[in-house]
Image (cartoon, rainbow, N blue to C red):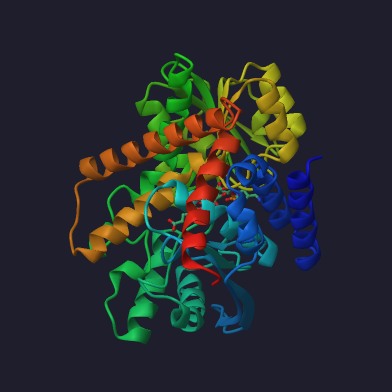
Length: 448
Ligand code: NDP
Ligand code: 2IT
């Protein structure tokens, strides 16, 4: 090992020691800084300025009590988080996740990834993430509203259109953003549209934000296939999950001529050989808020596999779009054996490090989340632009901008991977592009 590699390993060990028990955060840090040795070799000033050490330490971490009353009047207590990780390139920006598994380690892994993803978009946004260990499943609208109001009552003092701009993630969609914005407006007495993104287009939200992550992920995979002289046209695909990202990944793949034969939730898998019907998906998930098993009641030729593993289904393109570490080494081996040629991560860190290694060794085109799913936050930044100029763009124009951003992210990752001696390795390309953009700004700002 060279001294640079040893130094990076020491930094990683230091991160593990300073952040005990936060395995997802350790994993995300290792995955990024493990690829940065060639960058430090080329730009020794980043080591001198201790950019890696500084980037691994969040600028600010906020943890707070969220008390609320359920429909029976019983008091419930949850824990809220906001990790404002890095503001070198712009105001803190990143989603809120409401899921019972949320703890500091998850929020920190997501916030860390967000720094580099946001830099990749080329737009002026820093990195952050937040959320709560609140489980929206089975809660009434009123309960969700009271929870969101209590959450924002504390968080509002840390936000602002030039300070920190949250959006959605797992368990947080347009309904939750509405309740959060309503409470922010009430507490601050300001109609500050740009303080949250993912708003309804009826009151300041950007058209295409709802679709953006899924559409962008499909565009990214199409770009990876183009480099190989192929496209999504005619490809058999599987998309895990059935939430916001999954639904619009299915929609765009189908628009680009691919066929999605399966999607899922945490209870099971739907297999529909003639292709998932996206209108049914939207009706069941967005309108009725039901489980994916209900799809098989609507389409009798579809099969529901309770407890099934979606990666057992043969496909040419796999789009993990549910959650972290949902695709491990054994699933990666099965996908490769079944003829999978491209993987686009719609979710954040859905593939384990071993799974990613298997894809790269097998020559599968592997689009890491921080590049492939950046379309969501990029369109959030477009929403901020529209809010700042009190303007509203058309669907067509906004989608064109999203498409151009995804094409540019692909180009930057592809060319940088080749420049640093790893052609075709988008993981390395994405990490290096994202890191160097943030590092340049941090060096310019001095020791802050
Ligand atoms: P949603 O809440 O809309 O949907 C989440 C989906 O993933 C549901 O189908 C859910 O199933 C499934 N899921 C969640 N947790 C688990 C789990 N532990 N095991 C199995 N399935 C699970 O969230 P999004 O679609 O917004 O987010 C999906 C992923 O995309 C996340 O990793 C998120 O960080 C990432 N992402 C989201 C962006 C956005 O704009 N929304 C932007 C970029 C990335 P169930 O209902 O059974 O829980
Ligand atoms: O992981 C992500 O990029 C998001 N959940 C979207 C963040 C945002 O601010 O739009």
